[in-house]
Length: 242
Image (cartoon, rainbow, N blue to C red; front, side):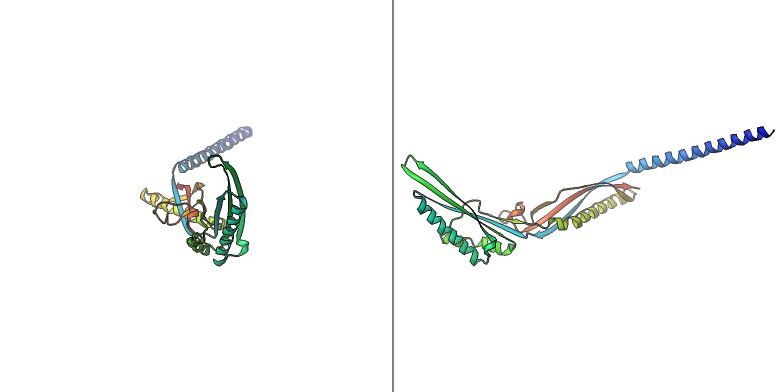
């Protein structure tokens, strides 16, 4: 009799464990299905952040030269042009440390048609300064160099650079993420849902362009053409919907 009761108790205990296992298994399965449905319910949005900045570095590369039949004579003319360029930059208020006599080159060949030796001497001077607005004013006044007999060669342009990108990256990424969430919330309201956590995020690359486009044509210009620039970043974010 005792053995029968013990056997019955064991069977009841086993049945209870089996029932509990089925309940837990059903819960786990149901929770897994719920999570799977949540994973399916998501929306992908892009967030944009833009910031106007002013370049903090100006680089002006000035190239000039002289062509003649005699090397010492051509060299003397180039030396005088170099002196005038240095004087022009000094009068504009730039220090010696901001001016670099980058390079000098000589090219010689024999002109068979004219039966003469042709010598070309070229020199490059580079201004590199943090005083961007002063550099911009000097660049606009380069006609003074032409009047002094120094014609700058093609490609002797000013390049403006913004070097503080790393400092503004974190707040701009936060702004772009916030912009993406706002767009997701508008979408969710229209579809009767709520925005949940971030499922996946992809940070776009940062780009720097001229803030106002090309001054002459109004078309897009590269960042280096203007000291007034715009930094832009686009992030792509998947949000869960619930």
